[in-house]
Amino acid sequence: MNSPAAPGTDPPRPVVPGGETAQTLDRGLRLLHLVADAPGGLTVTEAANRLGIGRAAVYRLVGPLAGHGMLRRDAAGRLRLGAGVLHLARRAQPLLAEGALPALRRLAEQAGATAHLTVVEGGEGVALAVVEPSWTSFHVAYRTGARHPLERGAAGQAILAGRSGAAGPVSTAGELQPGAYGVAAPVLGVPGLEASVGVVALAPLDAEAVSAQVLAAATAIADALR
Image 1 (tube, rainbow, N blue to C red):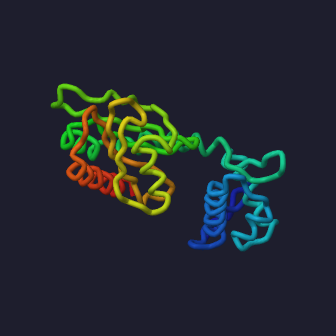
Image 2 (spheres, one colour):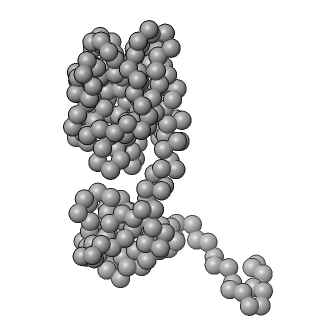
Image 3 (cartoon, rainbow, N blue to C red):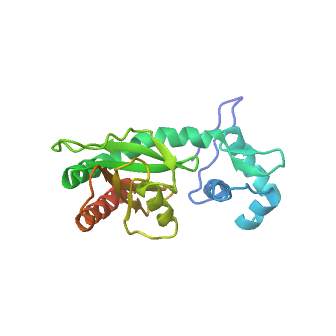
């Protein structure tokens, strides 16, 4: 039996597992995903149609999400992601790097090349974590935080391949740095993450052996982050 509420306070709301609160949360998260997948944003009507709910229900979702900076409405009234999403993404990046480091260390030592985890940020590839091999005399110095277009270099091209479901490794030569060779593969199966893992070296790599090592690292990182 519930105790009566103290004078001047609202009675506690009953928690109903799987009830209205859970449904609202699910719809709000689905709305965020829909907006994230729409480069030009969504109108309230488009969002309502895709969610299968009324416009009024979408407005009720937009209010608190906008209040927390997760959504915003542009000058044309279209729904777009807010800066709050970037804040969460930045807070999550150290956790991603930490989860990937064991596989990156193993890859760097096996391949004798600099290993890296690259993620998508602002339409570019960003090196989130970098591990250099311990036993080589020379290796590529690849700076954490380095950015490059997704269309250039093995890391970015692997991410683009992953968007179409291709899991195979990608090899490039001299696209980001003259004389550098890269092999990378997408990290697949982690919701909300677009990333690749790869190596870069100053000499041609054994494509068959290194490709297998990179694919194993991509699988290990995906397992660690799921």
